Amino acid sequence: MKTDHMQILTTPHSFLKHKAKPIRGWDKKTAKEVAQMAEILKHTTNPKGVGLAATQVGLDKRLFILLDEERQTTKVFINPEIITISQKMLSSVYKKKKDRWLEGCLSIPKIWGFVDRPYSIKLQYQIPILSTVNCQLSTVTEEFSDVSSAYIQHEIDHLNGILFTDRIIEQKGQILCETENGLSPINL
Image (cartoon, helix red, strand yellow):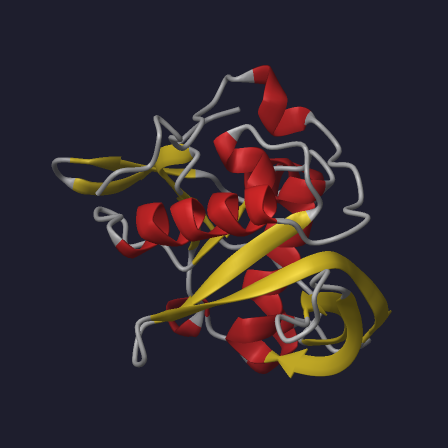
C-alpha cells in the first residue's frame, strides 16, 4: 500500500484540533489524496476504520470518506454541512447501555465511549462530477439515521477540530481505555 507517507495523525497532534477549510473545486491532487485516504482506511485494523476525515491525515480540506465494507468502496463527502438534526437522540432509541455501541477513533487508539448524538440528520454535501472536463462539484442533500448518522457526525466533528472524547466530556459521559483485561474507565 503506497500512500506517499500519508498517515493517520494521533493525539495529541495539534492538527486534530484544526478547523478545515472548504474546498473550492475538485482537482487531480485532491482526487489522489482521497484515493490515498481510501487505501489507508481499507487497511486499518484494531480497530477497523469506518470513516476518515482529511484533518486526520494532516490535510486542510473540508472532506471525509466513509467505507462501505460490503462493496469495498468509499464515499466522499466534500464541504459537508448538517442542515437539520432530529430531536430524538441515540440514547432514546438505545435505552439500555448494553445496546449502545461505543465510538472509537483511529486518531485516539484504544479509547472508546458512548456519544449521545442526534439519531438522524439532513446533510448537504458536494460530490465531484467526474464526467466534466474540470471535474466540478455537485451539491447533494441526503438524510441519514442511526449508525450512519453517528459516523457522519463523528467525521464532521473532526473537520471542526472536535474529537469524540470532547463530546463525551461535554456530556459528562465515561471514557473507556482498552486494556488486556477489557475496557476500563478513565477517571477524569
